[in-house]
Image (cartoon, rainbow, N blue to C red):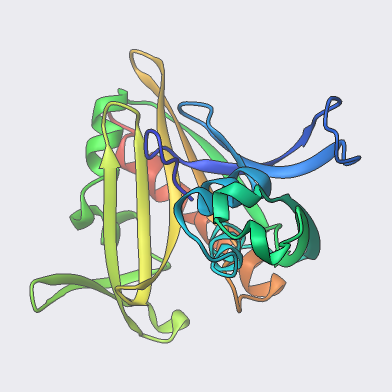
Length: 237
């Protein structure tokens, strides 16, 4: 999930609005860790209705924002009649949409004894994957000028698309992996400078759809072991 303002990573949080006039003080939304933008169902719905005349596509937008969720909930969305240009049809001011709006995630932290620039440079290079992601990446390949990864035998020796998107100014590194270019799961990471010779690496594992709790926990434990490979890369820095 990316901010529309700065393209920064957005994480799900619970908010409290004591001035809300709908009777719902607590709500779930997304907050950008870079610019602080907040997005929830109300904001998403209002943005959609400002641009379209039909109300039905709004549910698709909400499902996009909440597709990583696991718990089915009911969200109340205020609707402005003038925004949808259908006041003569008596469209209600509020309606309910059922969407999946929570997700399971785990963020791991690692302190690396090296400057931020070096850690960022190493992790943002796709060629480094076989060196540190040893329980995931068995081999890097190129198909039709597109990088792909052959997973380790323990992961079924699958050939998957892989992409790394990074921004050195913010320290953000997104690892995207999937069977198709339009079906890629994101594993966001951030490199943060602690001191001149010490760097903090934050890596978030998201439980994507169709992943069981056991598989998700196995991914987390695998990443913990792979963290040791990253530490070894910079032990003699």
